[in-house]
Length: 472
Image (cartoon, rainbow, N blue to C red; front, side, top):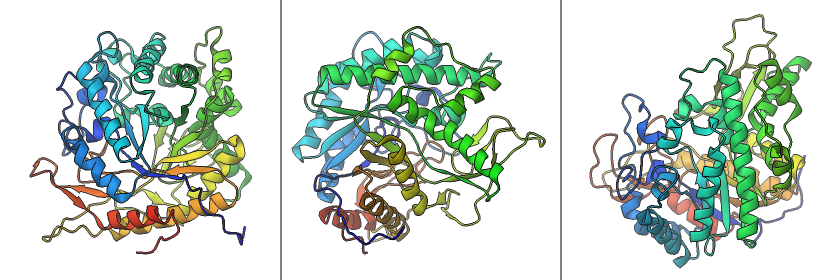
């Protein structure tokens, strides 16, 4: 499609960037905070843990001031469940309440809208030991947590996100450190029972938000990226439809329409994995409506048909390279795309295609809640970080976002990953994403000084021109 009419992004477009509590804050077991599953999981060999991270807990005023210098209109961050409720339920940790209150007030001081994620991979370890998301009562635990957040911050926070990357929690939970299959015989059934409870909890929290905070807006934040067929063979297209349903549409069909995707339901039937659904569950999920869709995008995936004859690893799903599910779809390396240093495919056109498909299906405003390039950034002797590769990545994606907006897709904001260097879930601190460099190594903390990368100055100009000037 050739676009000739130029339509700028809306004047109130929410430019910003994202972080998550367990990856940026540090002080992970102090100031009254209890352990989450991220604190108790086995850390990959050779990578740092989450004890210090970027020490945002002690540097938040400096860091938010730097975000204000870039011109942020919003800052997406998550609230650690165990900093508010150390065991996930029961007594409230007032020091945790006060910390996030200070973060929110600092944002507002600079006219930065807080965009708050309620749950970002950090389930309280005490709740995990009780059965985690497999336990029906956890729905009430999450609703209670949300109520506390709404009561304490609702007058100051307009935008809320429910669960970060629920689809990744389901598909690659072991890699994230959020899935425990001890004693489980049917992994698929457990995962989709957990998923049902998350979907129900999300629906109840969206309804609660609209009741308690009628002026607020709330939405989901899955990781959505379009799946390509490996060829023009009709069966490859069927495989792509299968994986699109399982990876993407299950979560948004339920969030927006309150229905289980039919292709996923068939998959669950074939795997004896239909979740236990209690009376009233579907009515609750149909009644809950998001105000917008937040979604994370890094790369697309490509699959081909799998007829079940080969020894495919059933259930093996990889966020970067695709997926293999015996008899359903099989990962296929896309030869048309470049990759990052960490093997992630780079696909700005796929970004636009994903935006178009989401809007075509759901017709809701969208905010990009993650999009970015992880790289081995280097601090020079004169305190510079030349990350032109990041600028190029973001420029190409913003270009496609603008075209999608010109095509009629409602775009309300863009929050790349990440505002500041933080500890990657898999690769530690050396895999850097931020506009702001944190001077520490994997195991040597150094002085934790903040430095502005080249991308910092570039993004400042992008924001100042509302996305019109994308040049170096």
